[in-house]
Amino acid sequence: MSDIATRVNTWIDENWDMSMTLREWWSRLATAGYSQPTWPAALGGCDASGATARIISETLGTRGVIAAPTGMGPHMAAPMIMKHGTDAQKAELIKIATGEQHWCQLFSEPEAGSDLASVRCKAVRDGEEYIINGQKVWNSGADAADRGLLLARTDFEAQKHAGVSFILIDMLQPGVEVRPLVTMNGSAHFCEVFLTDARARANELMGTEGGGWAVATTVLGLERKMAASGSARGALTVNGGPKGGNLDRTVGELFEIAKEKAKEKPQAMISSSRVLIKHAQKAGVNTDPVLRDDLVKYYIRSEVYRLTNLRARHTGGSGPEASIAKIALSGMARHSRDLGMSILGAGGMLVGNDSASGGALQYAALSTGGVSIGGGTDEIQKNVIGERALGLPKEPS
Image (cartoon, rainbow, N blue to C red):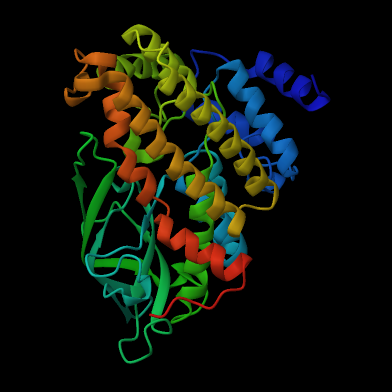
């Protein structure tokens, strides 16, 4: 065990208590610098390297405690603010490290998906505020968020990239309506958001008015990195922010809630090779030579993805390496789907806890499309690789 892991284990022994609230646990993590280790010490980190941060995260996972705040706040909003924000905006990042804020991304619109520069959501300056009107869609977790990363048009006369601004917005105000979108796997991971005379302070503009595309590009790179990565195995991840209702629950209560939720619905969007092998044995098809060969190929693919993801993290995660990892994850999801259906046979046509595999493989199969689309489609990732890694010309618009 490394000195870092030993130090973190000792700290957990001294600070972990099932009767404390989540708010207190996350506050202790931030004070110790273990919430977001690569961040500055004043913001909940300890100026750690990426390698050290992974050891800290993995140690927390090994001990089975609640993970540090995760999601779009730590992985997208905070790094973007560190790069583009003012000192006052950066000082607020401690609220992300302690889980007091929970963020979502407000980019895509019904007529602006892959071509984000075509956004029509309008932000008009009114004194020290912007008045915002428009619709956003496919917004992951917007129903649980109290803060939003908004891409809006502030100049309808300028060329499309030049007329876009990037604004931080309060999701709890009356002018913001969030509607969950139920997808075919039965989950409501995505939402649509309607903005009607919503307001944002002018000092929450990121960068300059009309200069939002550069900020959005940063966030899209961070999104690819987040989509390709995952939480440390063994750690329980929990939503923060005021809408989540978890901050003042005890950590023991949150573990009980997680156990009950696990009984209600399978949650894994991609089945691991171990899970697939277990279901193949249960179905009595694990001796089939074709299936055995495919399971071995899937295990190899899983290991290649794991190593590719480590490489993406090592290089900072916002370049072509992250896109390669994201494409590898999409390929894994499709392979997992096909294997699961091969194992279940006709039983794969039924869903629910009382169906074959308890519905786990069916849930993963129905989630495949979301894995491929979330964080940027495979086609977008291939464009990034072609242009940034191979130096190919941009795709004609």
